[in-house]
Image (cartoon, rainbow, N blue to C red; front, side, top):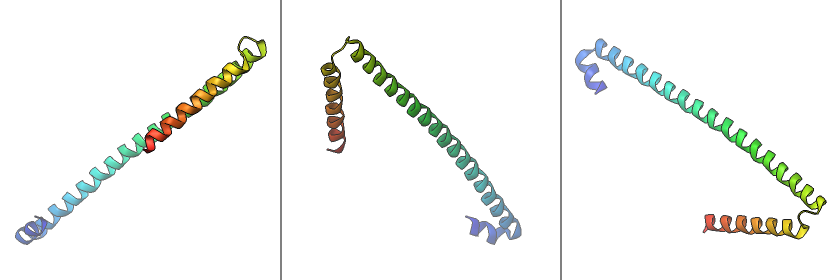
Length: 98
């Protein structure tokens, strides 16, 4: 199309082609900017979730220690829960690969 336009319209056709290219570049820059903003927002959300998971893990560890130390929960019960979670993680990892 641009060759035909340039051949038929000469300089005017060339200017129209240049304008079209500049419009495409502007559109692509805006699209990249939006994608970059989305990526940055998702990275921020992931960072927040990672911090929350770490905090929750620390709380569970400390609560487990307090329950064991107070004698409210036997060590065997906590170890059983941990083993069960480890098995569930291993099964989930195997299901994802198979």
